[in-house]
Length: 239
Image (cartoon, rainbow, N blue to C red; front, side, top):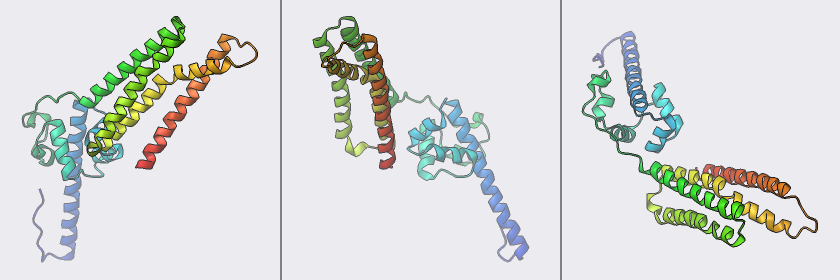
């Protein structure tokens, strides 16, 4: 890739040689960046998704793909494992096209995303149960009882997370934050509504049900938004 430089060359030749080395390094980085872009897009990944897989920031992936920075040896190995290619393909300029790929195989489904999908579906089912018991049946006892499965899901998730202290990574932290964000929007409406209705019972004058529903909706939106903001603040503090 690089021509040998004569150490006894004159200053002009040494300057030219250094420029050639720098240029060759930039060419290499651009070729590596093109390969990263091609592999990522062929898997249908966004920069953020690739960053989560590698436990790096999205900005780092962006710099790699623009050719302004290179992944270190650890991330080269992670890229080769993730895309099921050899490190030689990523680092060797002899591989110029996708047809030169050394044997590839299909990647396995992402278990983390499957877990997230399962938890979201479970919480959505609990939300439907709360709607049926609170709005349709209007049964206070079963309405309160329907909150328990949601509490069990969140509590079970947090217990499992705390038990795996040694396995925590940036990716698991992001997963936890995302889970609690979704839970805040799916799980706070009916508890907020229950509290509003309970407080209205102590009000000396009758209040129209539509007004109560509007108040409950506004308080719910504020509560969910505040929880989301607090999660973001804690994530920034932890970084």
